[in-house]
Image (tube, rainbow over all chains, first blue to last red; front, side, top):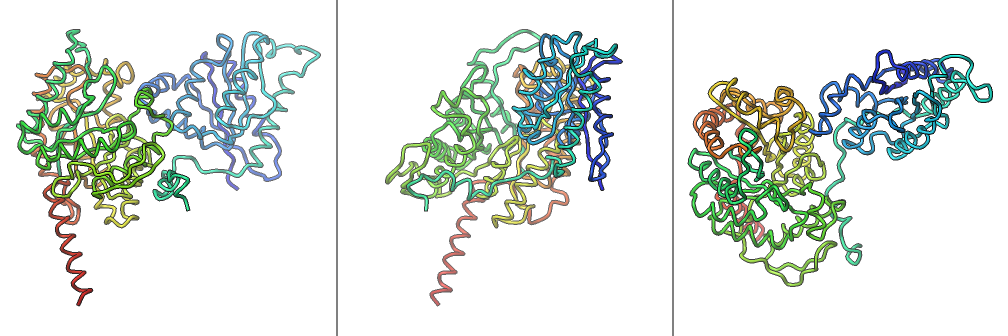
Length: 216
Length: 372
């Protein structure tokens, strides 16, 4: 059995970053999920920090550098995607958005049907609805399938027992990972989009334009 | 193999002096560049079509008519003619008129145009870009080949008993190229009609265009126009030359860094590595251009972009001297080597008239066979 491909996009900027820490925890949790089909999960991490200049250049020139093209292929060719951003000014970071803008500009169907787990990090839990107000609509626009549980990690979540009245971070990670793994294992693997260009035969393009009165 | 230049017609500040040419200066510079192209032995001059500042060429056949009157050999073309927002009837008339005035030295490259507001300014919708290109060209194709056309479509007033005048010179319409940067539909359209396909490859890496051109070649054969290798392909190129590389790089860098399309983006070094842009000696331009054949197969037309980004006219004319004296003669020789005999030459009016006549006499003799 070929392994399932899980790609993790982390938009953290500092090294080490809590965004990457959350991304790794989520990836590991997905990898460890038991599955009926015995297919292993291979994890590939895309650090947007390393691609920051390439992403900016792509927005200007319209084409990706070799390193960025590789990262885009890893995302579009994955069986599942984990997308993690720090919260900046009440939303995902500009770098995070630019990366997905670049993918969408080249092919607006590139992430259609892709199982996605969204996650974010921030100083306080007050920004946690970023996941529902910014991240989920972004991937809805890209026609991806976003799992019900989105994971937010505030600074507090990394220590202590958290708020006793809500699920702890490990509980949320486990639930979200289970949801993503279920979608990934149940999904028919598709080849990456970089195959030969698909084309509608020209007679069909012409016929589609024929006025109604002259259609047979 | 034909070699030429294509111009965008941008009015851009010279970043080294801060000077912005007037529209009048820029228009006269474009025509000076065209005349120079003939003088140095190039085959083709093509102008863009734009309907917004900072671009001047809104009326290509007017400009090309002026150039036609002052040249003898140069083929006049476009890069591109907007098949989406121009009335196909007017394209048929304008280019047939130009064809007569230029004694056949005319072809035309269709393009969709990617400036959003131009569509509504001309009463169209950019979301209909591909259907407009398909329908308008289907009408243009008939207007040039049928004396009386009855027609009804989705985007234009129907025609009853319409004759586009003048009729094409010698009954042979201008050769048509379909230009595209990213759309497989346009490669398919060019293949369907057996027309040329021009891949404007200057701003992007070659892998993308290899897929598009391969698609065009495959579909050209599918529609029975010949083998994939016989499909008619044109490519762009972008060059800046001085006798030695360092001088070229030093002089061109401020123009690159501030250029309208890619300025303030990647470095000159990265961009020359990733795209056809060559900044260096004539030999480097020769070497880079020769790689196009390896990437895309034997092809018919090579157009260079040389007059843009605010380069002064004097500099551009020097570029043309280098192209004509040092680059193109070598390219002609090298591209002719190992070129298979059944790969067609670039299209000319004379050759197309001869082919049409041969086709006609072929049909006549078939009829005679049948009659016997």
